[in-house]
Amino acid sequence: MGPAAPAASTRVLALLGDPVAHSLSPVFQNAAIAALGLDAVYVAIRCDATAVGPLIRAFARSGGAGNVTVPHKHPAAECIQLPTPAVRRTGACNTFWQEHGELCGDNTDIEGVRHAAALLLPDLAGSRSLILGAGGAATAAACALMDAGAAGITVLNRSPDRAFALQARLDGERRVIGVAISTLQLQDASFDLVVNATSAGLRAGDALPLDLATLGSCAAALDLVYEPGGLTPFVRHARSLGIRASDGTEMLIGQGAAAFRRWFDAEPPLDVMRRALSA
Ligand code: NAP
Image (cartoon, rainbow, N blue to C red; front, top):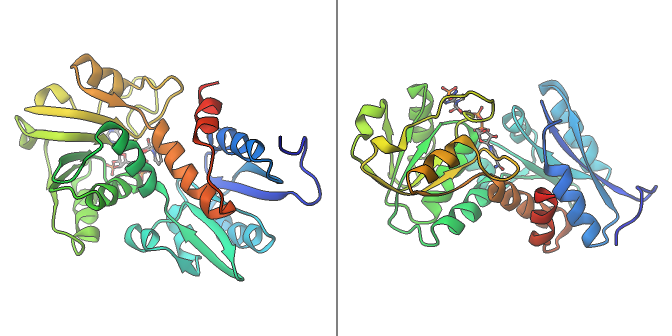
């Protein structure tokens, strides 16, 4: 069992973003911290872009660490002294800590997508995927799919300019990313995996980002939006067409577990994290 309440020695980990009140990270990170009996506490702090750098430095220098969420992952990357390759690839940082006096940062969203996608399709080598969206989560998804050996990745975004920017950012690694500028281009196309990396589905009444029935075929669908119970509108839609689908809960756990390893150099209890999210 962990400490009953934070003490003077307690290490403070913070999630920085705006908004943060909806975040489930404190729920499953504190459950994992308690299960391992660590003297630490994880809190969420709403802050604006000007405060994110000073807060990251202050927490890290005082022995703390933490996560960064929308819209601050790019400003966070700017203030990191030792970025991982994941931060350099994406230009975004979602995890920070201090090591030997230096401020370190990682983007564990890539690991989160890899973890979630592997549960749906264990072998993504040679796969063809469609990513809906072109923001931070879509960039992490593209990196994860490239790392898994994807043969082709098509990006479709409401604003095509952002899809071309994503392609340009990662094109130097492997030229497997293409851009679709309209759903008409996707009619009858076949994909092993469709990833919803848009924010569509976060609010009740949001239109679906794509009618999957218009595709030629789709073996599996991964929604990065998460919802307690796992039945987001996109997951419900996919399953109604007989497509294997899951929401972003496992991505949340995967990125959080990778962050936990950076902070504590310990293996996080995934089952405890899952149980905390389903309670
Ligand atoms: P972001 O950088 O702000 O990008 C948002 C993307 O969604 C953009 O491509 C945007 O298109 C698109 N979009 C927004 N509203 C839309 C709508 N109504 N219809 C179609 N497209 C729409 O945000 P992000 O960080 O990539 O996050 C995207 C989603 O991933 C969010 O739902 C977030 O909750 C989820 N996420 C989940 C996890 C997890 O652990 N499960 C982690 C990170 C993110 P435009 O470019 O045209 O604006």
